[in-house]
Image (cartoon, rainbow, N blue to C red; front, side):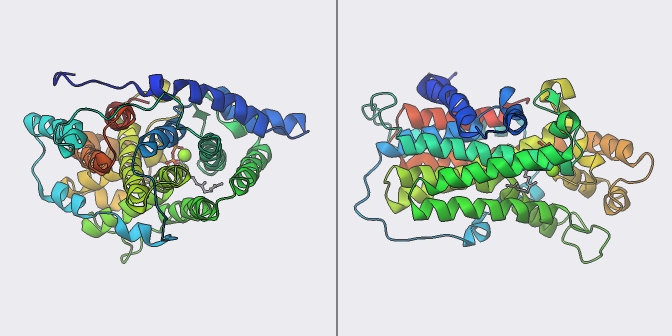
Length: 398
Ligand code: FPP
Ligand code: MG
Ligand code: MG
C-alpha cells in the first residue's frame, strides 16, 4: 500500500494448509451412506471463503512466536457477551458521518496498530513456514468449518433460501429432511473431532459456540410488535441488542476458534485473551458488512439472494440507522415488512439515508479494535496477514 509497508499475503502463508482442509473434510464426512455423503459434502463442493480456518491458522502462527505459557491459570468461559464494547455504538450514534479523510485516518490506524506498539522495531525472525501449525490446529480449523457449514444447512431451511455459494440451496436440491440430517451429521462429526483433541478447555469453549448460535437465532426471532421489545425504537438499546445477536450468531464462532487456536499453541493467558478479542471484533465487523452487502451487491456476486433480510423481516444495522432519519420506518419494522410494498419502501429509505455508510463506519471501528488486539503478538508475517484479512473483511463484496 501507500505507506511502504509490506503486505503479507495470507494465502501465501497458509494457502497450502487451506487446500488440505477441503480434502480432509471430505474424509471426515465419510458415512457409509452414499446419499448422506453427497448431501453433507454439497456446500463444500463450492469454494467458500474459508475465513474461519484461515484465522485459526494465522493465529496459530502468530501465537507460536509469542511467549510460551508457563502455566495457564484460568478456565474461563461464559461472560464473553457482556464484554462486547458497546462504547463503539455511542460514537457512531452521535458522530457525524465520517468524512473521507476521517476514514482514511482510521484505515491508517488499523494498518499501523501493530507496528506502533512495537516501537517501529524490525520484525521478529519469522518462523519457518508451516512449522508452527500443529495437527491439532488443522483439526480445529476443520471443526470450525464443519460447525459453520452445519449452521448454514439449518439456516437455509429456516430462511427458505434459494441459493448459497452460487449453488441451489441444499433443500432445493435434496429436500428439507436431507438438509437437516446433513447439518446434524456435520455437527456430530465435528463433536467427535473436538473430543479427539483431548483438550477439555477447547472442548468447553467450542461447545459453548453451539449454544451461542442457537441463542443468536432466537434473539433474531424476537417479536418486534411488542412495545417493550428491545428493538421497538432505534435507540442505543436496539443497537446493543442487535450487536449482541451479531456476536452470538457470527462473532462467537470466530472469536472462540481464535481463542482455541491460541490455547492449542500453548499461549499465555493474555495472548489467549487477545486472540479472542481479535476474533470477536473481526467477527462482528464481518457480520456488519454481511448486513450491508444485503443492500448493496448483486445476488450473482454474493452467490445468495440479496434483500434477504428485509424479506425475512429483519431490521439490521442499515435499517436501524435509516430509522433514526426516517421515523416512518417504525411501523414497517414492527410488522416485519410484511405488507405489500414494505420491503421496497424500506429498501428505498435505507438507500436514501446514511444507514449504509454508518454501518460501514461501525464495521471499521470493530476492525480497528481487532487490529489493536494484535499488538500483544510480536510483529510477524502472520500478524501482518491478520491485519490484511481484517482490512479485506471491510472491502469484501461477497
Ligand atoms: C447465517 O445467518 C446463519 C448463522 C450465522 C447461524 C445459524 C444458526 C442456527 C440455524 C442455529 C443452529 C446451529 C447449529 C450449529 C446447527 P444469515 O441467515 O443472516 O446469513 P445468510 O445470508 O448467509 O443466510
Ligand atoms: Mg438466518
Ligand atoms: Mg440465511
